[in-house]
Length: 165
Image 1 (cartoon, rainbow, N blue to C red):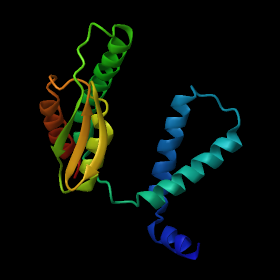
Image 2: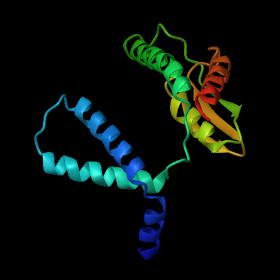
Image 3: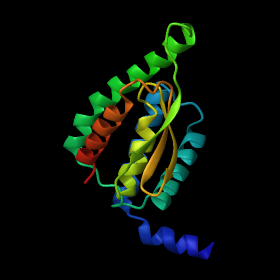
Image 4: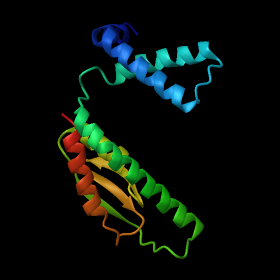
């Protein structure tokens, strides 16, 4: 426990703490539609979440280019909508959509931050799910091997590289 306290003190930055706390609070506020019930509990969870985030991802480890993030957001939302639409279409019209499942191995960057972002975001692409990161490769499950998944993943990798510093 003493090591944890020492580590937390070494990565604690009042500015980073405040920025993250405000971001988490804004996210909570948006999710609950501005309701302020159980405020003490919410404040406790926000404080703990902020401290845990500082411990897990110390300030300065994940540098993002603001313009790159802004350019990525429309792609992210459109891709999320396409993925959701694909799932709904498969659920409501199971026979009308072809399914030819398989696995695809994708070469990934040496930068683990880019690899993690790719693994997290790849599941938004229609018919894909990240399965395993191993030896600079990412194993991806695809619902239909005939879809242009490889090209979409290559495009996503380029967008992530432009977004990260």
